[in-house]
Image (tube, rainbow, N blue to C red):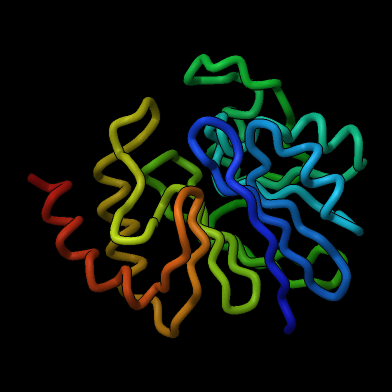
Length: 201
């Protein structure tokens, strides 16, 4: 499966918005603050908005893009409330998920397989979105780092369990985080025991 990826950091936190193109279909991943204009220029055939989790800087442009492009919003069920309730109080325009993903699920959008892998901790519904050999991992994994576990609705216990789960996954994937540059799953797996000990202490 040929996958083409465009990205641009958005807003004051440099949150990566991705346009992932497969078979001339474009998936919009984590459209943050100010993403609408860029997406509308660079996505030629948008079919869905995919959220890795519900934090404001990853979903800010959901509502506008859904209205302008008439495409559905997908998010893991446990984070769906964040789209409407603005739990961190940043004034995010409210949006509503059209499809709520449960657990680890493979879904088909216009015949393209998209896998949601649930890694709770940073938020209850934090998920990796797997398309081909690529992981769009939001704020779960970064290059030499992981997402914070001290926000409202975060969980250190869940983060530990998610790292233990990620340690066991075979194969290598290119990781496209919510902030910063790309890395690989194998590279980050080398750090996971250290992070588990740090969270546990």
